[in-house]
Amino acid sequence: MDAKDMDRLGSAMAKADEHKTALGALASSLKGSLIVASDSKEYDAGRKLNWAFNDSGYPVAICNVACVEDVQAVVRAAAGSLSALKLGVRAGGHSSFSVVDDSLVVNLEGLNEVTVDKEKRLVTAGSGCKIGAVDKHLYDTGLGFVTGTNGDTGLTGLTLSGGFGFLSREHGFACDNMVEAQIVIATGAVVIASETENADLLRGLRGGGGNFGIVTRLTLKLHDVSNAFGGLSGRLAPTISAASAIVRNWRDLTMDLPRDSASALALPCGKPVVACVGATFNEAGATAKKRGDLPGLAFIDKLGGWAEPINKFGKLDYHRQLQNLLEPMNQPKFSLTSALALNELKDETITKLIRLVRKEYVSNEGVVIIFKMGGAIADGSVEKSILSHRKCNWWVIYEGNYKRYDTPAKKEKCLDWMKKVKDLLMEGNSGVDIPYPMHDPSLRADKTYEHNAYLPEHKRIAAEIKAKYDRKLT
Ligand SMILES: Cc1cc2nc3c(=O)[nH]c(=O)nc-3n(C[C@H](O)[C@H](O)[C@H](O)COP(=O)(O)OP(=O)(O)OC[C@H]3O[C@@H](n4cnc5c(N)ncnc54)[C@H](O)[C@@H]3O)c2cc1C
Image (cartoon, rainbow, N blue to C red; front, side):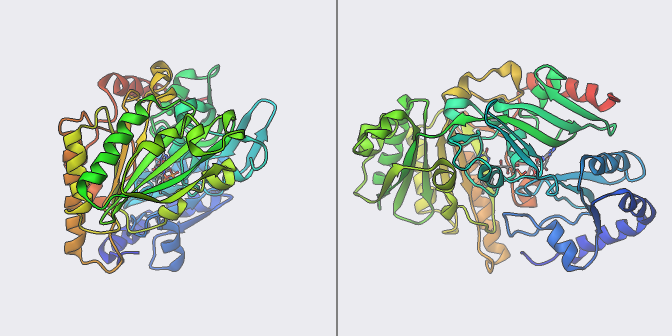
């Protein structure tokens, strides 16, 4: 972790002291446990972000809930005796939004039950589950759910904010596949949101994040994943023009990508390669002799580059192999991460982007990853979610990560680099923000990062749904 900030810790401890009686009463009503701010290992472990080593927030207390009733007790306290504190919700703990200063954090890790209904093709999971843990319950079933590409990510944070992965171009966002959620709303009542019960709330939860209450359980559709093929291609491209050509080719070739297929490009800072990930869910793979025989992967042979030193493709076990494919590149780090969705990706932008990752980068821990969107995401029903930017073609994740012993000045430069990437992508490419975590409080606080993820129409609908359920008693 970054060095501990004793001022912020001191503020959290002072507030814990101020609210000692109310925190004590809450602690005694929980089946789980409550950790109060202190200079202890237990508190540090509780406030740690799961994926980023960056210093996280200093909450006044962390409630490790063990059941739905615990969540109700925390929500009631947050609305009553502890209303002076902000309420933080931590599921997978992947984003710094979950553990903020001077808050009461609900840690949902204890809600981790998973049940699979193979006949109905549904999986139901407690809201504290990581996606990799839910995947394990589906090993050897030939079934999978729409989710992200890193097993350590929390299922609920990902699903409520959209959720994009290898199956999305065929089946939509993760949230489109959420058929039911159990949620504790602001009054402390437990409510079911489904197509037949409180359907407006289900719509709000599909893309609305943690705005409507604390989700305790969710049910997602399962899909056939028995025919998964794919892998990695590393293209050698030491010059800016060679790397730009690969990105332009990929952009053009994936315009016709079959919807049962997915692809992403990774542009690691300071390295002479462009990596391409491809995946397809196609029966033709059973008889395919080579990568080019599969319509969803054939484009990779035409990407160009000086050579293809890495070429690993074949039949993949969806859960054990495809879902883990990007993990070696996706390890915990000192993370500065953000993302944008783009309608366009102009030639000029590509060249400037390659310049930023090849010449003007600050840290070789940085990377830009571009996922192809489209397919079922684009035609998913706008009326059934509040996600605004379904028609965007590309999802660009940009990371200006730094190293443990980097100086504060270098970290500042990494932040500037992030802003340069953002400015480039917004300028002339119709970039829009999407709900995404930023692992550094300074990025969150920066006004240039104020997001436009929701169109005014969707903000209005979300506000109406919120007003209704914030008052609802049963
Ligand atoms: C390495 C990495 C890989 C990623 N890969 C993908 C990917 O492939 N696809 C993708 O779509 N996204 C991806 N993401 C983004 C990820 O979906 C978000 O960071 C998401 O918020 C993580 O969820 P979490 O539960 O782990 O986060 P947390 O930090 O626990 O939660 C984030 C926020 O979500 C809300 N929330 C969480 N749980 C609940 C709940 N039960 N009730 C109400 N609100 C809740 C809260 O506002 C909370 O502050 C990735 C992120 C990282 C760091």
